[in-house]
Length: 218
Image 1: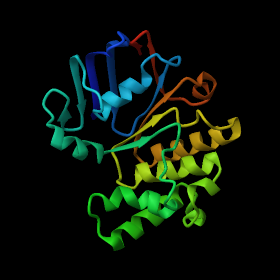
Image 2 (image 1 turned 45 degrees about the vertical axis):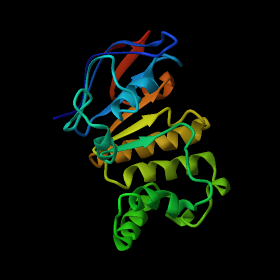
Image 3 (image 1 turned 90 degrees about the horizontal axis):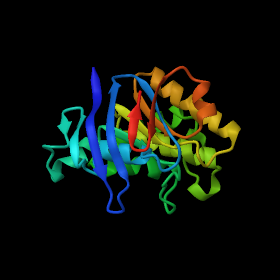
């Protein structure tokens, strides 16, 4: 079952850059690499999926949500079905690891008992539960990315969107994060990972979609 479908998508930024022709699908439980040089449009594709941006032409379908029909008030409900991980972690510096992950549940009114259960489970899944009372600035880059991944997973999303998740990490830590994403995918969560690290991509047997000059080449 296709959980993401982008068909003949075009989008222009005011400076004239953007996407010319993007076609992309992600199946339930699939792992897809979106590759291309810096500035090729990888992050823009992800922004269209979580609907921070809207296409000028074409449509983006994510689960039951369609970019041509979705109302602004429904976008938060779309995003609850997505887990999003960024290159720069984007953790809340004034909250510890547990509270960073719990925040995603508190904002949607999850019961405290359920929050504790789900946060501890997902921190265990990413191998960081022993650091749950640490502040982000006491963690290594790899540990911060594990917390960010835990936060993305705590709502049990249908797909994890990862935007250059290894970009700020040394090669060994990057490999550890890739292994973690592999494990997450093997548990059934689809992963769409944008990266320009071709060496990393070559070591994993997943479908690769290339984007160059705003055009996807599958």
